[in-house]
Length: 291
Image (cartoon, rainbow, N blue to C red; front, top):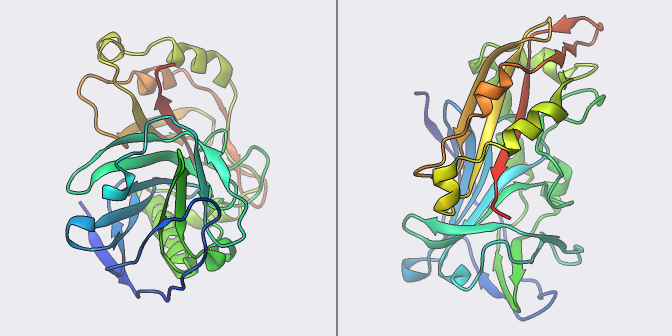
């Protein structure tokens, strides 16, 4: 497994006022670290120290405008799963509403887990590799990253702020990491960057219904919920060459049949800058959520 750690320089921080209740403000205590793994890129940083240590992670499994985001630490102990949570990233930024999961994050206590969070605009309806018909390859917005001052969550009258400082350089590094993933999977990053269109799932509606109806019974009985990432290599003819499912959250009984279902998927293949079909990536998130 290819795993290296890239430490990014600690960035300057400034204190700013809260948008609602007086926030709990936690200052950074480490540099940004970027973990290059085989199946994902994870950008992490620690805040506070001792018994007040907090954790922040941005995880991407392919190039995208959004990321899985996890925050954890003692300041989040009162946060509840699927409760309305407001998020914002800089002073004057209009907060947006979300409904994240909560769970235990080893060594840090209660974690607040966002399946997909797009800095600046909240939770997208689907975390897919690009929007249908849009050219190029989606990536994190570096310009928005430059505006960022913090990651701030408000739930039930409690506000917690992790003081990140600007994140443009961190986003640049994360974007490059996900481009490198394409090469690791035997795909052509440049062709994806300049593509006229992405692979389009033609029989999505029918297969999604089948996936939704196959919630594993044992997992359902135990109330298990999960976030998973699905990566499909699509041939130039629009067939499924391979399907990989990665658990983004830990489960015991929840084993998904998504990749079995995807063997029947049909795609309009991606087309490069010259309009020629090419071997490409289709990727999306799968969230098992009860109720």
